[in-house]
Image 1: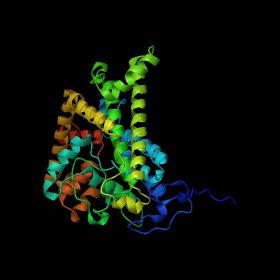
Image 2: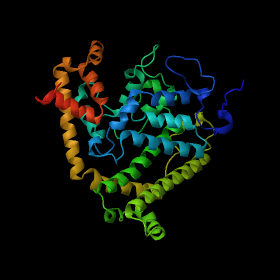
Image 3: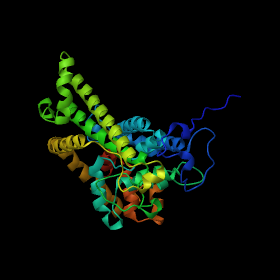
Image 4: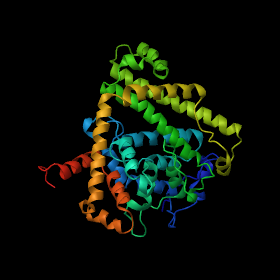
Length: 381
């Protein structure tokens, strides 16, 4: 009988990478699989989850109904995963752990992107607020119900830590369970940076595709102009749309190369030789060069001024706020409007938290249809 091929982590990983054999384990202990590592099993549990499938119809920037050409929360997640794997391999980090963290990092996102998150945070302020990071942890620890012996997905400590310590604009204390005094694995920090690369480069791509941004506008950006001239010279006969795609690829390639080079230099300078060393340093060694940081800052400022604040996006966000707020108010006022399975949880948790869980799990189109069912007298319930 031919034995399954198992890749020994100690032979292919750098000394500072996280190893599945040294994982801090799961909340509910389980026997190991004969040829799949703990992080591989986590990745596959995430991919097979209901919450992961729902990402297909959740907003990245454009509401799902706006068209099929734009990124969704699912395609964004896949792109973050791809960037994370590429960079992890180049740096000798654990690809499986990086991929699992990338795939899980947005599971708790609401419909309508950050707009939905902001509204739910305001509406649940008296019961602890709402953060998509914390919601992702609730999803994998509680809300997914697929296994007979436990609630949630029972993921490893390192993947759950990657959720909790994922950097966002909302500053939340790290639960004691996840050792707030420690830095996370490098794989966790890598996903943060891959997330930044993905949304910076792909938002400018979607902005151009939508017509909200124009070639003349993006020409002013140093990070774009770096490649525009050479691409135009090489592929002068191609239409702008195809040159646009090539420039975006070049941007991503440059960002990843810069990240890998700068990070490996910093790791060597700090003499990091183990995961224990990683957890003790004051600041993550992963990051971009000063020049690229400056260009990325200019890109984010440009997108904020010319893309995210465009009247089309502002109008979508305004409608989304009303939909979320009105659904939330209706459920809290009359919990009998909630489906039976969700309503049963009211015995253990406050109505606002249960309502936030239910709304956060909705896709864009389901939230829109549910709003119609509850508020349009002509709509069948």
